[in-house]
Length: 116
Length: 117
Image 1 (cartoon, rainbow over the protein chains, first blue to last red):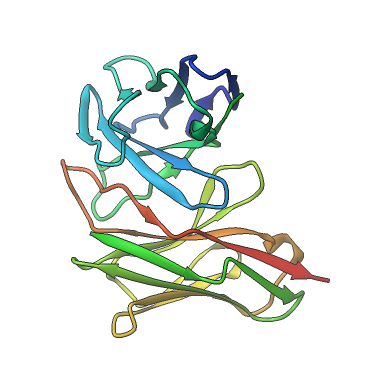
Image 2: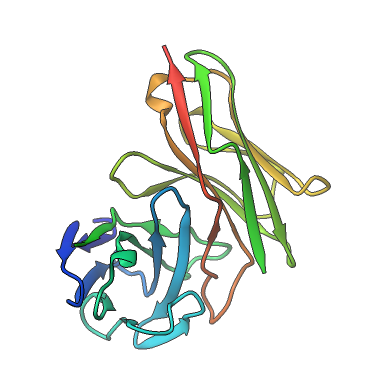
């Protein structure tokens, strides 16, 4: 069973460009989370999605950031008009709640975004 | 709302010595608590989790942690450090369920574990 996949692993953008980060959850997982890790910081929760629904976006910046998890295909985190402060590692995690009890979030390897 | 405090951004121990990484949390609901490890340029791997069963939780690679409600702590320990334990360690808390799934995790800032030969 393949783990959570993220691509690209490294992404370089110039200020003002758009960044698209992709996350394919583990097979059978219908819940996806996005986290951002700034240098010397822990991970910060951004958004929680189920298929075609945003459940909790309380950690998303109000402007320029959006996320989706369509019925088919990977989850996408989109950052418009990137600025240097967006440079960070972005991690995706997936989870399945089909079993009882609390379920582990499985993390992908991350996408490291560098804004020049 | 939850929060996590990890005392010590860097901890250095000798190979073979006891490892102790501290984590204190605050939560308005009974918490679920986790320790994750991150190796350079990699994602996070779950070491262990507390989900209201036994207060002493055993994880992978010889690590364990004890949930102490009175102290709001969930410190991570390992009796004998190995060079391969050098990594970043994150403590995290979740308040439970929302939307039929699980809440996003709240992480501490991490502790960088250095192993001296």
